[in-house]
Image (cartoon, rainbow, N blue to C red; front, side, top):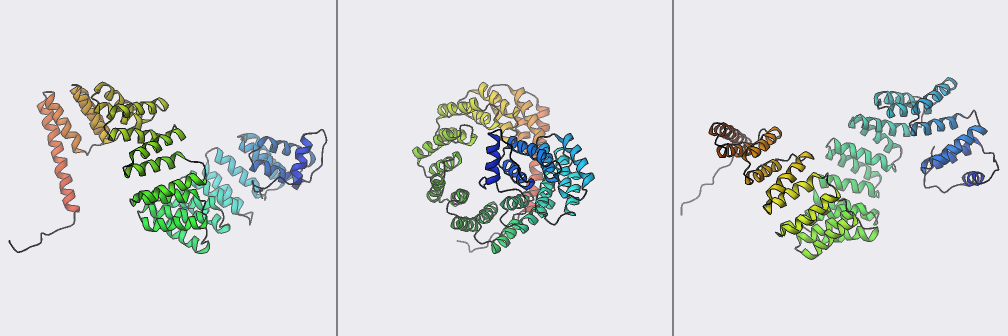
Length: 456
């Protein structure tokens, strides 16, 4: 079994490191070498682990466990061919060693053959009663295969073996979330909390499920219990702040975000949320201060730059908004959100050539939202390039073939281009879609009646 990475070096490790600093050669039991190697692997000291393996095999050349640890490092370093050769030899001596099948499964996983990896891990399960690690590996393989139902089942087995295995608990909830089974996640977490009522991780995850379902009172209660279980749990304070924001309790939300800053180093996300709360409270100077703190803490956080830009944009200070969105673009010119915002600001300033260029950049970078096509076409129309505007809307129509608004705008553009035939064609299509949508809306709407009252 691997050592806890937080364990302090014991006597064999101290003795081994002392040996490395001298020309002396000390003898260790094979088990001591295993402990030394596990310690280095768990702490990411691969070169020291390899030295321990080499010396260990010199002193214990027949040790199966040391050879398997050698294979583990070879697989980690993608030296798969040599690892397989060693495993072939080991299997001739002991075909019932489950670790051989586990390492072969790791090799297949590295080669993206997850079905074969799963088959080998099931063979390993038949050979050992200590199956905790194997279930965790199976869970990961099913995740790679996007089989979230089976992944969930295997991670649940890990939690049933060790209810303090929070990594597997997180993976169980991740599977529930991916399957959009939030009620299932809530039921699972409530059952878990019946057995572990002081588990801050489970309360935190339960609160997030309630938040997703917009059950804000239940979410607040869950985050409060997480904080009771651990009053230094930053994630619980932050998520509680988000709930309070949704409830319009901005001052209380600020208190929770500020608590995260007092517990640990401040984060750009906390500064951003505090700024947003102050903005809602009309505390413009404080909002602006925290938005600046956001980008100071993390210059690459796009939401921070967009918050500053939006702050000035909403105030009608488009020149200032343009200055900050350009700073953002200079940092990350591949961000489609930056370019779209830049285009809207240029349009507000009637810089139509610049707006046209910015919208093109946004689309080239993958922003295909409906309003992008509509606003881009409008900008080009303002620039008196009607044909170009039509071509833009034709592209947009490929993404939104059912949107009547595009067809109506195209009809108008064809009229501007003196092409009444195409204008009429697009208008009729738009009208037809409008009627269809209206009928669908009427069909799916609940019936209502007008109450009869006495005439006055």
